[in-house]
Structure formats: C-alpha cells, structure tokens
Image (cartoon, one colour):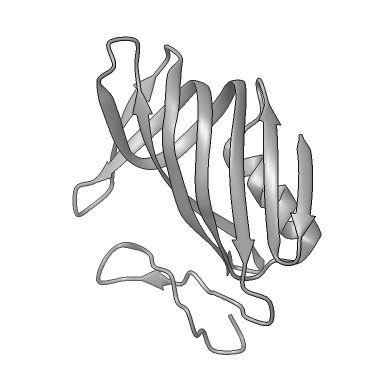
Length: 145
C-alpha cells in the first residue's frame, strides 16, 4: 500500500489482494483518525460481497468475478474502542451492469485508489441502535463511546 498525506487527508493506492476494510482500518488506526469519511474510491475488486439491508439483516450477494470499482464511499468512526469502517460501493462487471450496496467485503484486484478525509479533534461513534438492529453513525457521541 502506498499512502501520501496532506493535513487530515490521505490518498491510498492499494495493491492486488489487499482487503479494503483492513487497509483503511489500519490507516485510520495508525493515523489516530477517530472521525472521517472515505470520500471516493476507484479501481478493481477481484472479489466482493455486497449487502442490502432488508430490515433485519444484510442480504448478501457474492461477486467472484472481477468488477470495476466505479464508486466507493463511507464513514469512519470508533465502535467498541476500535476503528469502524462502513463502506458502500458501486461495482461494474464484465457486461457493464452495475451492482451496489453495503460493501461487506472487498479484495482488491490489480489496484484501488482511495481518498480518506479526517475530522481532526472529533470522534464519531457507531453505537448499536436496537430499534434498527444495526450500528448507526453518531456524529456527537457521549465521551465514554
């Protein structure tokens, strides 16, 4: 992985086989980012799992053929004391059909380019919201989160 930074922004170039969640999580952990966003991402994923929230759980679709990473966005927070990386993606396959949703898992195929921006001095939380059945971004969590 190559990384350049300027202020609270990081541009990443990920390599084939890299796990998107792991690499982004590693960057925000080492840089001490407690609040941020994945502004954009492009490239190729060799495999991915895309989810659709059906109100109870993520219904997932496994993509085992390489897909172009057309768009990537997300939020970065702290959950249970660790970095929490929440990503959504649009992916185009060999027929040029686009699929998208919550990126449950994504392995880079060839390369991926990702821009991360931090919000210095802030901490975003991601507490479990029981009424929704999932973790939601909290822009102003209580100090204990």
